[in-house]
Image 1 (cartoon, helix red, strand yellow):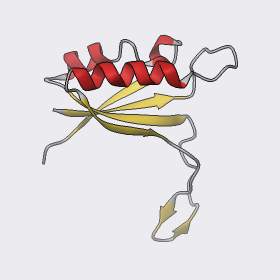
Image 2 (tube, one colour):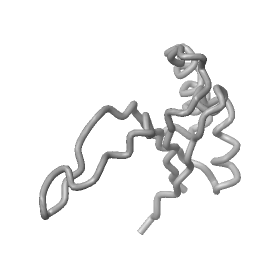
Image 3 (cartoon, one colour):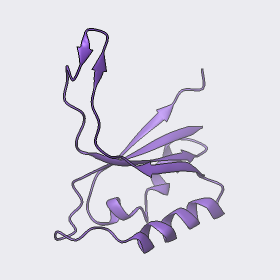
Amino acid sequence: MDYLFLMHDDALTGGDAIGDDAWERYIARLQQGGHFDGGSAIGGGVTVHKSGAGTKRITRQLTGYLRIRADGLEQAKGLVHGNPVFEAGGTVEIRELPTE
């Protein structure tokens, strides 16, 4: 099954950004296990709706995502361990990607 890990901006880093080396180690571990299927930081943007652009605020607390392969939700939850946001006390939202 495929999942999205959506990282929130509530990590308790004492004002310091989470270092790239922490991400590199975490992603390397996911890759070695065959679980990593891409991801990225998320920048600013706008919302669009047929009735016009900017009708709603963007979801600002989301700062990045990872696409993860896991056998099920329990395994996906286990793969959060080592995630720099999670380890810094922040929230990682796990969402299943439907297959159909």
